[in-house]
Length: 287
Image (cartoon, rainbow, N blue to C red):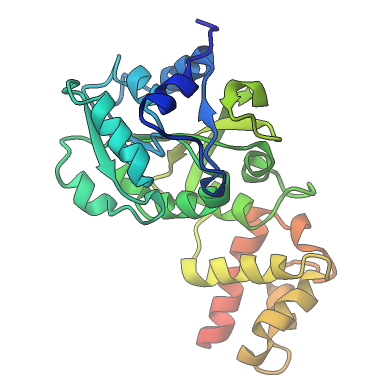
């Protein structure tokens, strides 16, 4: 362990180069690849869906423990590379598809257990892929995903911090998150300009804090952070004002015992949940 894989050689063999427009940064540090594979809770699963399989370095590491690895790759050229590299490997199945729009229902229908999901996510699509995963969380065991450190910090942020925001609230409501490891730029080819973090997510059977209407809760969170420099009262008035009768928002803040002069980052998940439920009552007339 500790050595770097010769990614250039693999790409050259197939006449390929990393595509900057696709944010292609391939992991080359064998120890990091090993640590990511070890973060999969193998006692729970033997099937893994790998998102953004690239040239298959992590796929090969996962295949050491898995009974089945579904290597998902959007890039047609890399998908062809993967099919060639794993043509004699019965464990690895290559699926050419966009991870951000992957039909998990169809895929899960032909798997015999809840799979884990693993991936070195492309930075420019990471949030989109993560929210797509959230919609299928109940059907997936757990996820081990790599993000740009800035986004990883936001996902784990607590209320009151400068990095706390929409993704912090919505993802923490539906998953338990823990950091697995941090990854330095030299672990990739080509080297990115940022550090990365690997997080493990466990989808929750129920929301961390119950809400009466998830759609409204999501709208309240996004509305509050939509103008995060404003007081939360003013931000939500801009987002919702026309939907309420005169004084409706003020009554909601009072009933939820929340100071409307606070900024969005000062509200906890419990605060947002309580406020969303009161607003639901205000909108439905159930007062």
